[in-house]
Image 1 (tube, rainbow, N blue to C red):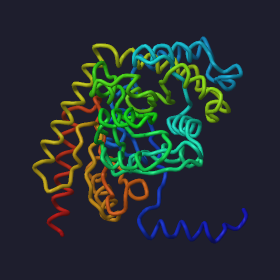
Image 2: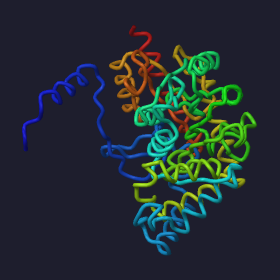
Image 3: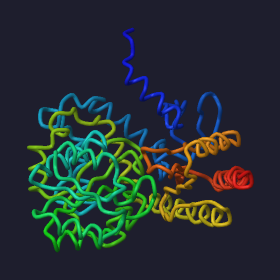
Amino acid sequence: MPNTPLWIKTALDERRQQALLRQTVTLDGPQTPTARFNGSIYTSFCSNDYLGLANHPDLIRAVQASAEQYGVGGGASHLVCGHLAPHQALEEALADWLGYERVMLFSTGYMANLGVISALASKTCPVVQDKLNHASLIDGSVLAQSLLRRYLHGDVSSARKLLQKIAIPGLLVTDGVFSMDGDLAPLASLAALAQEENWLFMVDDAHGLGCLGNNGRGSLSLESLDARAVPVLVGTFGKAFGTSGAFVATSNEIADYLTQFARPYIYTTSMSPAIAGATLAALRLIQSSEGEERRAILASHIRYFRQRMAELPVRLMPSDTAIQPIVIGDSDKTLAASEALKTLGVWCTAIRPPTVPIGSARLRITLSASHSKDDLALLCDSLESVLVAKVKCE
């Protein structure tokens, strides 16, 4: 093996010293609340499988049926010969569900955001984004080499000032539910602002779709927004849908434009047709009475958790979604809390900078409809034991 360059060693050493080194952990089994890591069993509270569909028998059967009929691989990009019948069926079903003219599938959520923003933005088309938007949204602007400005988190007045300072209209972008904080963007106010200033409004609702709103239609549904108010909507399948991949819902004209210029769409093999079939099965579940029941269970879990945490001396973020972060601040202390939880049988990963701002390291607790009441009680009891003991030690 060649010698590792000094700058790589230095960067890794700095991460280790700051308690920021990331490492992969292998899950030995399906994505369920009871998880096996490193040979031991834990109750997991860090998965984005919010509705508990990742191991649902309907999805497993759909994968098998689609694979038997269409194979496993897409074989080519959508524009060559990789757009199979399951892809088309999923796109049409999503468009009908969300009330958009067209839907385009992408292999991952990161690629969807890179593709859409890098195609729509440019050196002559600026982008204004929320300060806490997902990294993929920021990176799309960087790839486009566009003027990028970021407004104060959730602050419509700050966004307005930026839009009015920029001479030419561009793209206004926000998450629907913020992935590290769990709070909701002020979508109705931002949509009105975009229309007033003639900017194109884009929302990434990766963490809202399936879980929130009427029939699980997400953050837009909570504020009665439609395709006219939000012309570009991105969603992912790796959260509430329990599969993988992503989509953009938009107008026919914008979809035609993205088909010409969104490089991650043009030059990437399509998602597996078997996964497309499973995702369509997941959509049917989300739309069904079972989906309503799962959303109700998840909402009940959120209420219980927040009631229990209100009794403790912890900094719980103001979130009514499945994402329930407890901010500890210091990275070393957050890692220690995560390790202490493991000794009690609870798996909850410490989230540290640069994923979150410096000084805001946290336990990013995520709840799922597949958790039981006993699972929630274990989590809350364990957090009380670990975090109250930490406060007393300080």
